[in-house]
Length: 342
Image (cartoon, rainbow, N blue to C red; front, side, top):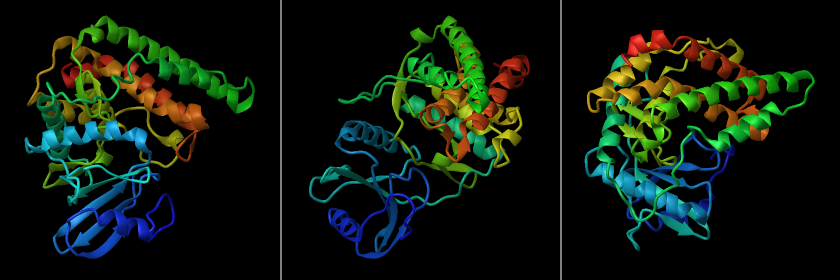
């Protein structure tokens, strides 16, 4: 097995799989991708293929995981495209704990990654609306914290950290970017609040609806792969994040080369699919562009404030790109509204 990132030991793998009735093991293969702290193995047996995942955290993660599993089971009963969870043979639980480590097993779902086609993009919006519809009144004994990227003191704290960088050299440039991002973030938060955000109903939101978490077959979404970020928030926050994630344009490895604009056609397609199932209230629709600005800033600033980097990219170059894109949305509101019918 590859050594990059967290892995399973042979003894660990044998012990974990002994708790499941999945047939005679024929082959195991490490699945590369996702969090390096959450190793994944594809197990092929005489009964099919299965995905084993070790959670990146310890026992404190159990309640959040139980909630996510309850959400997935609820969706599966309604034939929503999720990978079926596999329960242990002894306790009939979809959560396995061994010496402080937590594991989960899914039936493996085959499919292709997002190809950018109109059909797939529209279906992501359609399935997101079904996700929201099926979970409108969902309740469970444990719930994740109610939280979102909107009007967040945490995000503001991270922006302040970035804006307090050294007054000389690259630090000065980063501080200036942080200050302008704070201005844009605050202005968008105010506009969304004026539209009535605090009065909008909260429900289960996916929290991470983007192309990397999906598999497709024949232009249809066949599996949503990641429920680690499920939370309680207004559903419009999910839609705003989806519109952003599917419309972001970044062809080159260097974010300094990424264009300012978003692919507004993709925004239209996501919205089109969503509206086939759920028609947006006027004020919620009007909040979408500002929520897109907020979620883009929130997602970018957290790792930069903590490490000075976004992945392998320098914090300065990445946030400069985010600033350009946030400005573009802000300056092209009327064009985007006309294109999307907001």
